[in-house]
Image (cartoon, rainbow, N blue to C red; front, top):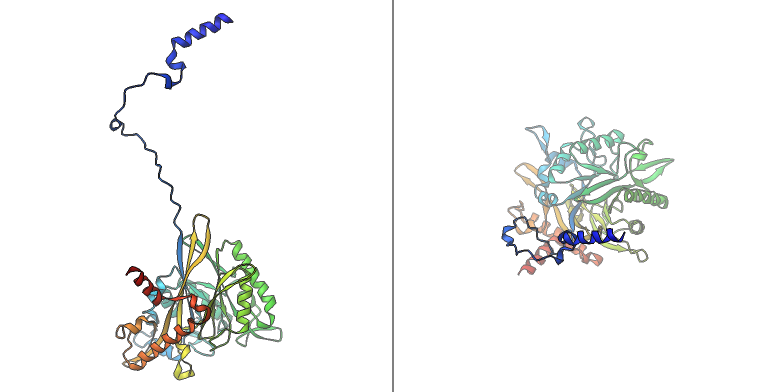
Length: 432
């Protein structure tokens, strides 16, 4: 055994270069690195975290078509209705959004039903095309005029909107469909739903706008009743839970609520907003009063949930005017822009900025033709000719609308929000 061990030792010595660590070998001649083109250099620079994602949600209020609008949008030569000019001036602001919502306060029941205005609305399908062309993405179909043209009107309205690539919330064609919509925008999942108030029941029947809701329509419309609020809020919570389970990172509720022509929210609006705040709703958008109401941040003292509440977005398009209602505020509207940011490191999502753009419905006569145009303010006040403000009266009314909107939204908690005009001034001052 000893002889074998000694033999192995001599063998290792004889083969020393292959039996010892290379660090003990004689150093090789230095290599010129230029002769080694495939040499890989180690990257020692720090790894940059992924940049956050930011998207913009834009919302507007009521879209209505009254009798004078039907006449204004009708072209005798083509025998067609065309609504594109209504949105010409505000299109750039809507298109700028990643997700744009509106409240459709009419139905598309078809020409055979006869086009009609208040109290039961039925508008030409071409309105849907104009809204889609203006840059809108989602139509809120649940409001007090949803069943104006019966069940056929409810279902056909959905068909027309979907045909024009507009998604819908608030109503559905089947109880098997979801009560909400999940939109994945650049990797941020936005959950959207909509509910409308009911009027008092007629016996055992639900009613909307005092019209009996057919039993087969009941499960297809998201609705609540003020005298059954506790029960209906629980149903809303179930919808919220389903939205979270479906992956929603931001939850948006569009609510048709409040009192017509009142510029302050009522107690029911405040109560519903408070409850939805505790349920974790991030954004509440209101319609129905037909005038603007304030915005506020609502934070639950115990849970810390913060909710953006826009009590009423006002009228975006209608013929409700001072000369008819003796109420100037029905001509005022706004676009609310909500920026939502996602931190890609920890996947947290939050609202990063909120701003608003005042609007005014300009109605005037061009030759023998009546014209309706939604104007962005104050841009229109800075260029009368460009925005067709040719008369002293129209200039006065546009300026008054702007002043009234700014005054309302600067009250109380609304001072935490900034108008798009203020944003532009801030950016300019920062640059200077």
